[in-house]
Length: 453
Image (cartoon, rainbow, N blue to C red; front, top):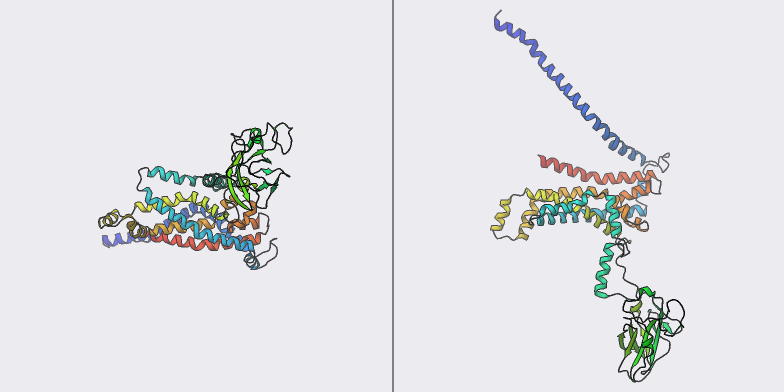
């Protein structure tokens, strides 16, 4: 037997044992990998798979969970007006919020590239992401408050309104009964007619002494002044003596005039003269023709102050909550789109500029098409997030308009735990929400896989 033959016979067992050793090594590596993955799989099963399967099964039973109703909960879900309104509001959220956020993020990402303090600007816009939805809801609930003294938005709206249209000084004032008569439009007029050369008094009540303008002066001197021939004089005053005393309908020495009150002289139903009262409440009409006149205080003097916009009313509550959502997520969209913008080939942009394209043309025909994959990922991610919105709607919307602002997530909670106590119908709503979210999730996962390839 040659040496070569002996070597082959000795190597045979070792060669045969090689594949077996490899297989044992692979099984050992697979077992070790399984041991590391097992905790994550257990958590995934306990927190995701089991709740999903349980909810699907629970949706086929009644509220008590003891009687099988089949698809009854799903049929009831689409007959319930509150659920239909929740579906409608969810559609509004899906159509409006992701589109606005993607557009704002794109615009801000492009503009930030052209400023020196880009990092500080991005940090400022991204900071709301660090605020929980609960805290953000409380912040915007206060910001949207109807009282201008509490709600910052209504305070700004009222300030702008009053700057252009003004406001009444005496919204609580009313005329003294027996001396003044109130018309249907809210104005007051003298019960008796007056002629030129007379002095009339118009007593008012309902104004707190502390609410009087700072320049208000005593009205007694003005009431005692005689009118010149051809003039019609008068005084509008607060018929109330501080500390008590005095006589109703008569100007007492300590009673104050009402400055800034609009006064009109009316004849035959037509206003022939108009003026405003002085600091002591006095007024004067000159150049009047002979005849009888009625002195009138227009309703604008007593109009209630403008209270702003009902942000959390039935009409605007959903747009208002979407505004709060935009405040939180605009920074997220801007940062993601900005990251995609930083990877764009600069030579293409510079070539377009050299060819004479302006910035708008570059943005519309080069930047946006190249960013289309990033914009799609951002949009789909926001769609998934919007479908699950709960905290903002539940916290911001007041109780009376909760139903007008409800979405599928809040409706699911309200039906199950918020008073409805029907977990069968709530589970059906949860399954519907899952079915709506899954396609967007699958689309996003496929795009990620394609981008990695």
